[in-house]
Length: 280
Ligand SMILES: NC(=O)C1=CN([C@@H]2O[C@H](COP(=O)(O)OP(=O)(O)OC[C@H]3O[C@@H](n4cnc5c(N)ncnc54)[C@H](OP(=O)(O)O)[C@@H]3O)[C@@H](O)[C@H]2O)C=CC1
Ligand SMILES: O=C(O)[C@@H]1CCC=N1
Image (tube, rainbow, N blue to C red; front, side, top):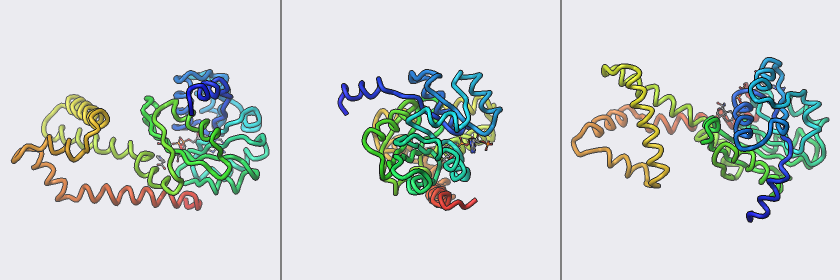
């Protein structure tokens, strides 16, 4: 889209309803506010009055029932657990204005699942974001449904761009995306926990170990992003012949850590595919 068209779209940014004010709902609210939306443009709904009171207090957004929020907007974001999606779709259905875009960020929930439960012709988009959106370093992948036209995709991309990077993917890739970037931050935190523990085992104070690991992760991620070099090349540069790194990497290979990552992410993708079929 050229810059003039983009500016004209931006000038027409309309209020958005966010249903589900948990971890990701709040992450999205905070990102949209940081990127210049006003609290009046964000209508938030949740079944927990406590969550709504917390968001209203912290962000001054409008907190409303689904019946009050949905008719006022042209975009509804569904940020509830996949297991709650059927019930939420039933609740929003009678209140949707014709043409309102419905964006789901739920793992596993397909555009077909959404379309079957919404009025005929409703534009829907399936999005997989991740928690680094909280620090504007999110990664979101978007797939449009049958009635999602270019301007609907633009709206969905614009929402997610408020807190990170956005790509468009064919929907058949969404379970893999969920396994890699959706759940991905958890694997990284898991590795970080293990490395901090290793530092403590080797006698470092916990605070020192944590600082060393966090900065090493940040530095390595920055190298990957800024140099564009392949991770194998970067790893080889750390691995001096006959040195310490090769001793450690050999142990990781002996313990089949690479294979464990592959099977772990296969399990996550499988779970994502199961979630749309309502398996608890
Ligand atoms: N957390 C993550 O890293 C990521 C999560 N996602 C997806 O985002 C979605 C939300 O996840 P997350 O934020 O972690 O989950 P949370 O449980 O933190 O948030 C979901 C919120 O929705 C509320 N809710 C449930 N049913 C309804 C309803 N009928 N009407 C209104 N509100 C309702 C829940 O209330 P209650 O607490 O009472 O159940 C809860 O406050 C999930 O589908 C998940 O797959 C996607 C990418 C990353
Ligand atoms: O664990 C989950 O199911 C969600 C989806 C991706 C990250 N968290």
